[in-house]
Length: 111
Image (cartoon, rainbow, N blue to C red; front, side):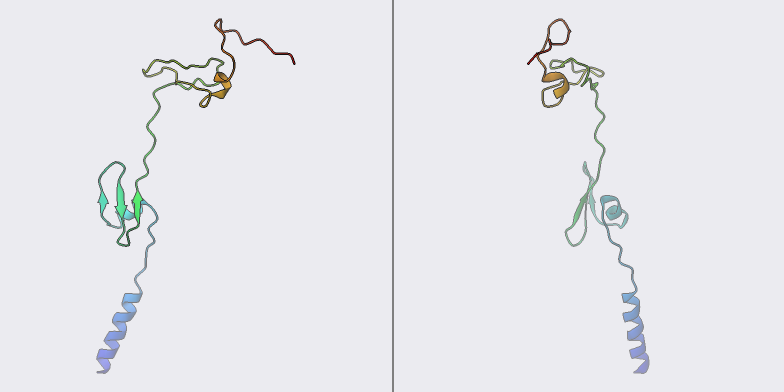
C-alpha cells in the first residue's frame, strides 16, 4: 500500500513538471507540431481554437515611385520600370497643384 501511494505521488509530481510553452505566432505553432493549412498564407490552429496566420512579405513593386518630381503621373504605362500612377490622395505634392502643359511651374499667386 505504501509503495502504491509513493508511486501515485511520483506520477502526480512528474505530470506537474511539464513545461508549458506559450505559442504566439505561426512559426511557433508549426514547430510545436500543431495542424496547419498549407495555403497562402498558411494558417495554424491550436487545440483551443486560437489560430495564427503566416506573415508574408508584400510583393515588390514593379513601378517606379516618382512622387515629388513635380509632375502628376496620372496616366502611366503598366510595364516594369514605368512610373506609378499618382492621384491627389497618393501624391498630393505633385497632383494638388494646377497642371501646366509646358512643364513650367504654375505662376505664383499674390494675395
